[in-house]
Image 1: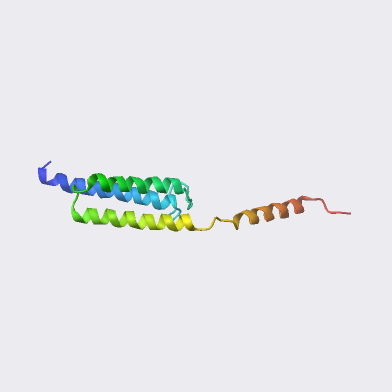
Image 2: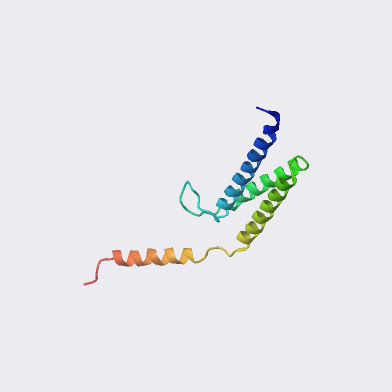
Length: 116
């Protein structure tokens, strides 16, 4: 492999790693459908870990990647942090619980034998 191809390959691999962490963070925040389950699921602790990994990459690669990569990584981390805070500040999903309770009560009533 010629020496001038290595930086291009490394740049592509680096950005692939960054976007992989980005996608996993978005999936963990429920912003994207999890391809394994076909559902949008929130796992905010996982999202936080992916954001932390991207922060670590930014710190460890400072001065070792070009300006475009640095800028892209900073934008991604900033966007993810804003989305994370948005998800953390959302009220808990309280509507789902009463619906399940009402559905269970309705089901129990329909299972009762008719009175004679």
